[in-house]
Amino acid sequence: MHHEATLIATVALGLVLAFGFGFIAMRLRLPPLVGYLLAGIALGPYTPGLDADPAMAGQLAEIGVILLMFGVGLHFSAADLIAVRWIAIPGAIGQIVIATAIGTVMAMGWGWSLGAGLVLGLSLSVASTVVMLRALDQRNAVETVNGRIAVGWLIVEDLAMVLTLVLLPALAEILGGNVPGEASAPDETGWALLWTVALTIGKVVLFVVIALVAGPRIVPWILARVARVGSREMFTLSVLAVALGIAYGSAQLFDVSFALGAFFAGLILSESAFSQRAAAESLPLQNAFAVLFFVSVGMLFDPSILIREPMAVLAVLLLILIGKSLVALGIVLAFGYPISTGLVVSASLAQVGEFSFILAGLGIAYGLLPAEGRDLILAGALLSITLNPLAFGTVDYLRQRVIARPALRNALELQRRGRLRSLRHELERARQGDESHGANVGLDPQELASRFPMFAALDMVRRDELIGLLRPRSAEPGERVIRKGDRANAMFFISSGKVEVHVAGKRLKLGPGDFFGEMALLSGSRRTADVVAVDYCQFLTLDVEDFRAFLEKYPDLRGQFDTVASKRNEMNLHIAEHPEEDED
Image (cartoon, rainbow, N blue to C red; front, side, top):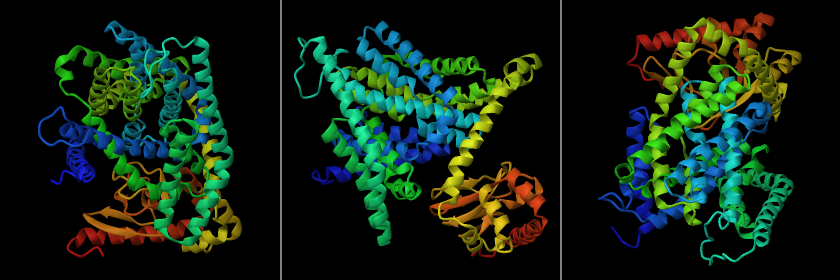
């Protein structure tokens, strides 16, 4: 190996080992994030064998943090948060406060300082959005009411951690830490410290105001000009320039963190017409650097903590898996929601992830958290992410136990469904307002007919009515859009991109103007094929209830669907009977 090629060696070893360990983790039905952390441990200085440069990995990790936070801002849904605000905001804040208090008391019992205890407690109080979304998606629960509550809860936690990342540097000296590169000022008066905090908050507020006022006017204008050039390469470059440029500029001009600047860069783009394309174009680089971020975190982990402090590791794990879950369950039940909602939220929170790592690193940088604290947080993350599928399995078991007892089921589930039903209607109104706006961007009745010839026979009135029912959805390359055996909940019309339909061991490709998912809706049976996106895809979806109501209202359209479904069924039977033929 050339010693001067440190950057290449770090990136190459990190990605190769992350791929290997991540693939093994997925084969074991574990989140790939576990594999990425293990790859970092294998590369770290605490394990024999391959060694990468931790300092170089840290710089790459900083880019990973920027792109992770850019993605959080880009996918931030104000409509979803507003719809579930009465449970997500007080629930998340209450759970963070209680879990942080427990973690602080636990750390102070070990002889740590108050500042160290607060950093540890805050790090353990929040969960990984990435892990939660993957777990809910595997259960087909992201779009359910309980899933939306859990997502809203995590959004509030993310926002709380963004605020924490802003305030922690200003409060570090008060809590017993120090500012990196500067001498501590123990004789500084309380008024001076208060002025420092006020100045920091003032800079943040000024940055936020400028970002929210000027950003939505300037950034989309720039991207619109770039998009007209027609170069995908230039558009990708412009998105990355916005993310990294705003993050770096905000840190230099306003002394805010890279993470906050990147979050607002994503937030600026989230409401623009370019949000979906920006997300699609930045995703590959975002994923690559996110992997390097988790690898660099793993490189900092000292596995000997499992032997040196087994009881401390167990205490941290119990707080993550049981303490947080019980607190969340109690809060959800106290707000009058059924136990099924509480169990889903509890299982979703039974892990820690990316924000915990970022906060732990910041705590060490400012002299608040000892290195042992970082090792405990990393150990808790590795173990809790690995055990998170077991948490969801436990949820299913507990719910079945409740259902098996009529009195308990009536008290904790049935009598509380009114609150959930009310929230379902509010979510539906929010989704219709948000998605109908997205569905109608650049889509008029004439364009609907040109994209999907099967609607050409509809008059303008019926096309307008159909557009009101369609909802936009996107998919990334490799994403499973439909899973064989699932219940049918919608049919899909492809606006752009391509998908593969996996049926009878063959792969059929569908592209713009095609549709899929209609057979299960017509028959009422479960899905009979897997559908996987092979490109960045944009869909228009028609909900099962809306689909059936529309077909009942316009039976002539049902005839067209029946004809297409019959032809597709014949094609599937032919494939099953002649598997030796090439699917192309």
